[in-house]
Image (cartoon, helix red, strand yellow):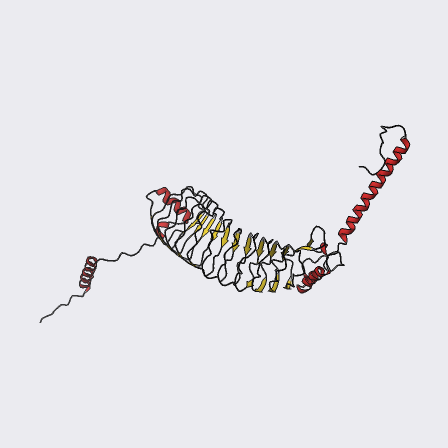
Length: 419
């Protein structure tokens, strides 16, 4: 519809002037109504008022984190009705409640005030600031979807997430948190949980069955790794640099797994079957107390990184012929033996693999040996560690006789001079 005069077709010629005036009046009335509605919407958007308690919660956050010195504090503290336009603040569709506070790397210093008066909050991101003090209670935030306080100086314990049915992402990496990881209860939509680089203790709790990413590396966690078979959606688990003990739990058939990193713990037993891990990209179990053979790797067609050095693994290196994505293969300082296997391709980067400190021997194929020289960045045969042979009784006798003969030959001759 056009707002203005237009040519009027006169299908009926009885009252041409009256019809034209009526149509013109209708057009003007409709356009005026539309303009009024647009103005009302603009006015409503500019002056939508959130509850006073939510405004105060925002002001408390501002005041407790040195708001005047934030990198960007545009709008903060302006008149009531402007809160949804403050930097980093978003409101829900009706603009009656705060739905997001997003202030990463914005120079916040101090502690976080309570979030309890923001019941519709879905996203809270204050990562990469200089915040300290305890993590705020989240129990009243039933709509919370995304929570990120990484790269700060928070202390105290992790919040309990029980009942946060909408929560999908929780990150508290690189803080100074202590205590244990709380049990996961009634968090059916949790996909990612990252609490790496803290000082957490205790055991790793049973994981939510729908989780995709679980990072808790570089803490002081103890006990065993929980059963992973019920977590069929698990794609990325990193528990390296802790004090975990016991065996690696079964992982065969977990086809979504992309990353397994259990390096630098005190794990024992054998490496479990890796059958069916068609998505596995990186596997790390170096620096543990593992023994036994390396399992078959034929199914791992996506594998690029394999780290199992500094254990007590025995037996041969399994076939790597199907691993045409493999870039790094680290199995140094074990007790592996037998000939080195053929590679499917020279995909291993130069110097990107370590097989020294074992008892491996030539494959009797110059090309295969040369490929491993390239992958190891040096002559791998010169850095193997073979055990010294223990002499038999006959050998001991021969050695002693030889030493006696050498001793007699070296003894100076005594001349008797008679006069």
